[in-house]
Structure formats: structure tokens, C-alpha cells
Image (cartoon, rainbow, N blue to C red; front, side):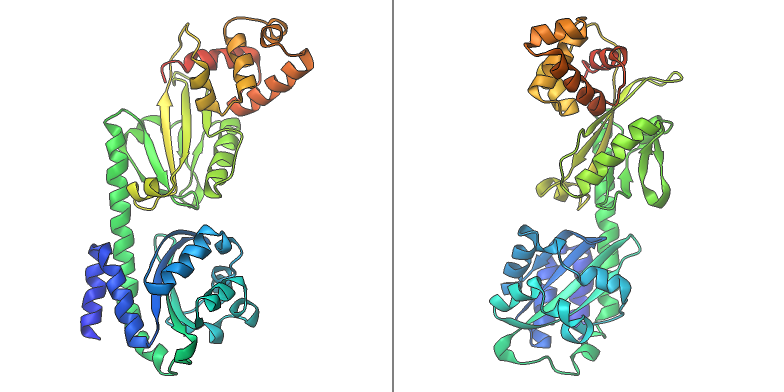
Length: 357
């Protein structure tokens, strides 16, 4: 097993070697194929697999089956150390759930694996799938696999640390554009930030458990809603949060950008990008496309907002937009909620200040 351990440590520094590691462990255990998954809380943020296991993980991830999977919550309630055979560890309901049925459809009958918590907060899962015709795993298997367990744990930890360093390097690149930025995990924990984030430290503030927030309660409520929506890939009222000028600090717009697919890879598995852009006053009203992009306004809402920013009263703006006053008031309420403002004067100042974006 010494040469397998050597492969494991090589994979810590060269992720392309993980499939070879998984294949070698699968072969040694009599499994058809295997996989490695990284979870942030219960949300999968990365996975790789070999053979038919790749098909299984693809179906679980793309079909959203992971949202119903009870294995990770079961692990939190029943911590394990080392490798186990699935039907000897999980409850019967979990062993025969929908995810297990997907595996059986591909010919798998038994699973063995381990879940390793990382100091960085993620969970790394190694799983081995055995075909139905191959029979049950050898009872001595877990003992043999547990000799590899400490090597896998150390290697996975090193890989996680390197991933965070790469994320930090990428965020630093935004510094050249003059943008204070940070990347967050799927749980909303700051993984990396650039030096410019310190320049807005009175506006963007650290929260408990490594989170990030805004000093103003109303703006922070919008930010946390946007982060929660980005975590679950859901729609939200706004992912661009305006922060009013205060005590000599300039007005800002804080963008919450979900990182998906290749974008997540660029930031080494991070789930959310936070970017703070400083704005200044202008006499020019931004284009409709800019306003729509900044505050997620609908075409009808942005038309009304632009008319107001141009100096019209609500009644005149409603007439120009071709809508009734009751509809205009409804649109205005939604605009206030999306921009974090509560008065027309605040809204007009914010919209004009957005031009330099």
C-alpha cells in the first residue's frame, strides 16, 4: 500500500492525479469505480469520479438529488472515523433511498466510503461502488482501507489549503482594477480577500463564523438575503446592494456574484464573489440597461426609476411611462426594496451616483 500512499500525496499538489488514486483504491477493494466529493455543509461544491461512478455522481448533481440526500445530515448526527460499508453504517431508509436507486440502476449493489471533515469547514467524501455481480465487500476491507485513511485526510487538507491560496491569488488580481473583493464559500464564509477590502472595512465588516456583512442594518439585510439566495442558486430581489454615503465615506454598490461552473473553478471552488464599487455624484442619469443590471429592475420599474431620476414627479413619471398611479406606486415600492432606499430623494441620488459604474 506504500505506493498508493505516495500517489495520494502527489494528488495533494496535482489534482489531476486524484482519478488515478481513486482507481487504484477501487481496484484494491474490488470495487468497480469510485469518487471523491467536496461538500460545504450539505451542498456539493466539487466532485470527480471514475467509471460508472462518474455517471452516478453526474445524475445526483445535475438532477438535484443531492438536495434530498440524507447522508451528510446523518453523518453530522452520527460521526464516523474511517471507512465503513454503507449498509452497515446508514439507516435502512437511507440505504434504500432515491440516490441508492440511481446506483442500482447502474448495476451497483454496495458502497463503501468515508467522510473526512476539513479544518477549513468542508467535508471530503470518498466513495467506492461495487457491482451487484461482484457480491459483498470483503469483511476485512475496512481495516485495509483505514490504513490509507490518514494519508487521504492529510492529502485532502493540503489540497484544500492550496485551493484557498489559489482563490486568494485570483481575488488579488481584481485589485489591479481597483475593486475591493472577497470570495465566500457556499456557507457564506470568507475564503480569501484582497488588500483593498481593508479600505472599506468600516462599510464591509466581519461577522461571526467568518461571514461578511454591511455596517448599515438595512443594507446588511439585503446583502445577507443575496448571499443566501446565491448559496441556493435562487432568485432574490437584488444582488447589487446600494450603500449610502455616510460620515465622509463615499456611496458604494456591493455586488453579490454567484460563481458557477467554470467561474467557480477560476476561484478554486469558491461559491460567491463580493465586489464593492465606489460611486460618486453625477448629473447624468445612467442608461436603462445599467440600472437593470445593477439592481435587477424589471423594464417597467427601470423606466419609472429613470423618469424620477430625470427630475419628474411620480405623477408625471407615471404619465410618461403610460401607467396608472396605483401601478406607479407599486413599482416604486419594489424599486425602494430592490435599491434599499425609502424616499424618492434617496433613490434619485443613488441612481445618479451609479453612472460611473
